Length: 421
Image 1 (cartoon, one colour):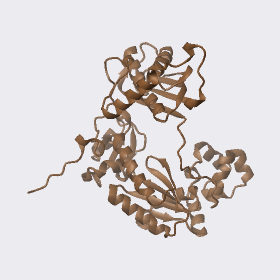
Image 2: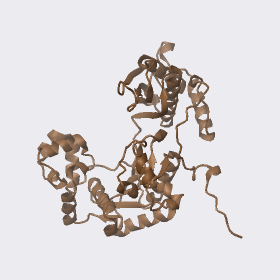
Image 3: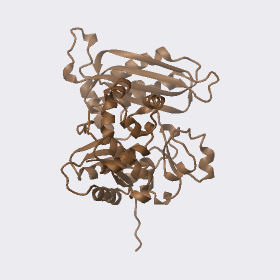
Image 4: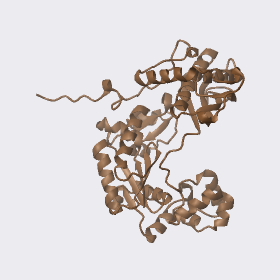
């Protein structure tokens, strides 16, 4: 059996752990620069706040219903995620961390009743972290996803734990689930299925495999088998290295000058380069984009993007910054009011895969790896860290007007408990 454990309304729940007065009150968490809603408590969902809505468009709802608004505190969320995953790994060593707030657990060989184990997981995570979770258990990963959805949808009946352990339960769950909500189907495949008269998961499970293979490739076939109770999607115990790293931000205000836009983009490139080094890869290409305001530019939103191929693979911030500035220079248009930008690094190779060129200009600077290692070490220890020279004198800081404290990662911001004498 496979368990899918999911933290309920994760970001909002993390904020509530350290501010229990928010329990019962609508809570939302905003994206970088306080742009859009990226997390909602159940109370926020009930009053009509939709995922992804710009904060300024929901401002009236925030005011009317006394919504607690938080800026995204990723340091807190990342640490709380680590704690939850560590607790769950005690139940079985075979754990696949699927995202920041959910993981699969392989329960094969464990003799404890699934329902009882799910309740134990929920009780332990809640007691040790304060976070609520839902647990779905089934013979396959796809069915465990559905079981988890049922547990979360009907908490009063399931106690946040649901097990699909009979054929009757499997068929009932498939009849209940709309086809677009099947894990891994996606919008495009859902449209194909609806066009073929397939509206529920049980319809899809009965489709001819030849049709599924032709329309949805072998991945669709594996998914169909999983829904029919046949394991076809392996557990990914060892996480693969990322194939790209993106840093994208909405600016706190519109920028028109070259120096302002360049400073932000260079900052993004520096953050992405550090991620490449962290997974010990080398990068060969990047894409940089800038976009004007979606709502205020009289000409409508205008996006410029440029791919840059490197003459040599590198993870050096200094070299990547040079490449990103060259790409930005080719798409920046004076006079436009830019509101958003981003950098994506991709086309990675392992260091041992690269052979140096006979020509010095086709090779990275041999002194940069040690320099980058020193910079990364300092940046891990000192908030603010070291900036590369081409980032100018100023430091870009995101607009996070509603940021909570780093309760678990900064000794100066931990909770204080006052005892009455």
